[in-house]
Structure formats: C-alpha cells, structure tokens
Length: 449
Picture 1 (cartoon, rainbow, N blue to C red):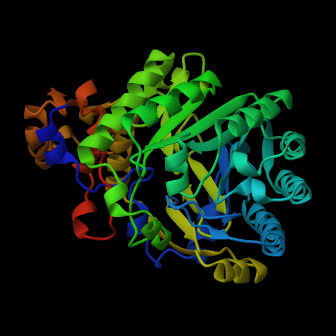
Picture 2: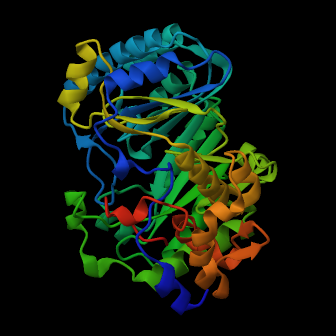
C-alpha cells in the first residue's frame, strides 16, 4: 500500500462487530422491549450466550474494556451470585428452549472467578438453558493469574476453548502497558491447558503499542507460533484516553505513527502466513485445519462482538454489567454501572437500559458489511434482492467508492464489490461507505489501521 492511500483512508471508523454500532444505541429500547424480544425467540434456531465479568487484579494501560480493579474477592463473589440470578431470570423469559451452541466468557478477567463460583454458574446455566452437548465454551484468560488447579477447574466446568491475552513479549513494551508476562509464563499455561484436555487455544496479540517496533512484533509472532495456538488475533491498539482515562498513562509520543502501525500490522501478518496460518478477514489468523478456516472457505464465517467467529447463532444473549445482546429484532445492552445492573436483576427485571431496533435498511447494510468484513466481497444484487430492492438502491454508495476503486482499495465488477489484498488493511473504511449512521457524529472511533 502506498503511504498516500493510508493517509487518505485511515480515518476513525467503527470496528463493525455490529451494525448499527454501539454508539447509536438509545434508551428507547428498555427492559420491557427486551422481554418481548426474548419471548419471540423460536425453539429451533441456535442460541449463543455471552458472560461479562468486569474485574481485573490490576489495570493494563492499553485496556479498552468495561472493567475495574479489585483487591478483595468479596465484590467478585457478589457479582457471581447476581449473575446466577440473572441467568435464571432470563432463562425463564425464554418461552422456547433453543439449543445453546456457543458460550463465551469475557471481561475484564473472567478467570478471576473462583472455581466454586464458576462451577456453580455453569450449573445454573445448564439448568436454565438447553446447552448442546457439543457446545463451544470459550473463556478469555490472563496467563499471569492462572494456576494448574484453576485450569483443571475450567475443564471440569466444561470449558473447551481458551483465549489467552498475550499482546507483546517484549520487556519494555510490557512495562509501558503495565502487563509483565514473560513468554515462559504463557508457555506454562498452554501446557496446563492441553494437559487438562482444553486443546482449542487462541492468542490475542497487539500492534501499535508504546515503544513497540517491527522487530518486537515479529519476535512476538515467532514465539506465539512456536506454541501453535489454533487461532491468533492481531489487534491494533486503540488510543482513546478521552474514553478510557487510564490510557493517559501511555505517553502520546511513545506511540508509533500511522505508517509505523501499518508496517507493524503487515509484519505480523507476513510472519504468521510464513508460519502456516491463514489470514482471515481484518485481523484473525488460523491454522488450515481450524474450524474458522473451514468456515471462511465455505462462506459461513460471521462477525459478532467477540470478533470473527464460527458461531452461526442469530440470537446472542448477554449477561453481566455492560454486556451486549443481539436478537433478530435488534441489539440490547445492559446497564454499565455495576450497581444499576445488580439492582435491576435483584428486582427481578432485565438490566437492559439501551439498544436499537433494526429496520430492513439496517439489516441489509449489516449483511453487506458483514460479508465485506468476512469474505472481502459482496454481491449487492443478491443481498438487496433479499429485502425487495435492487443494487441501484446503493447508487450513491457506489459513487463514494469510486476514489477507492481508483486507488486500488476496492474493486467493482458489475454489482459485486470486492476488496483486493492491498486493500485488506482498510476494509473498515470500505465498509464505512455503507454505514448510514456514521455521519451523524455520535461516538468517536479508532482509525481504520
């Protein structure tokens, strides 16, 4: 990619883990709306569950999640107890009992939960929901806080996929982001996981971190590939100190510029491909034998709030403060403040305090953006026809794409829009052309690369 193209298109745009995106959620969608939407869920379509645990032992300066630091276990235990109540509450609101095929625990650090609390929650989940025997149960974990006993407890609870936060193995970068995590520590946790039968392993890496160089990125990739996780995600650090005040601990001058970020991202991608990983979408990589690679090849890859996924469930139910759910009718988000979330659940009502209902135009644009993000290609005629429209509906968007087409960032062949390999790092910018909300000035986003 030429530097001029990066300068032209590397603008703040959403990550498109949903469409419309979270900054456009509003309080017009509330608990009563959510109850109606839940009651309409049918018995056949698969269901996904997401559990947000917003606690960590210490704050990593790069973090963009809804989380807080705790020194005592008491608030975590109280949170787990309330989440168990929420599981029963929401389970009772589902008139149908569709099979749960995916479950994801995120945070924060969900493995901050004690073994007893985690196993108790899993018992409550299985009592309230129809969890499929072969359901994928994934947990994000911080290797710094793991022990062999904790890994075994996860296995007993049914966890079969682990996602390890790594970021970077360079000492000076780790110090700058307040996350000291030697390679040997991560390798030990991988060994424990495999010994416990948790063989599906993901790594999360980052570029664009303070004092990070191309060499650091390549070394981290090499060390990560040595441990052979099935999937590796490489995310760009989003510096948004106006939203996450702890990021002010990272000096602006320590961060790479836009071109250096691009070079780091491409260095990681090239290295991973050389190590036998397939490049998937914007920022994921998987071994050729992995289910995500198979889904990509078969056109079944999807995108949700956890990023790229093989999860084909069209209904996602969120639990915990700040968690987001997606139902056919629209999106919902629980209250972010812990007290507001807990008060709602203990009062016997869903903690949803905002969301957005989807129009057919939203659904059509969501489908187009998802296919571009997953397949790097979309047939406008085929997608528009599903909603009784023609490709001419997007005449103005096609005109907006013309500069990108001239610069080799996008290609149009008839009514098919494609993103060629040189345009991959800017795919979010291509998707943004189809985002009818973006120019409304709500929210601030990270840059495309």
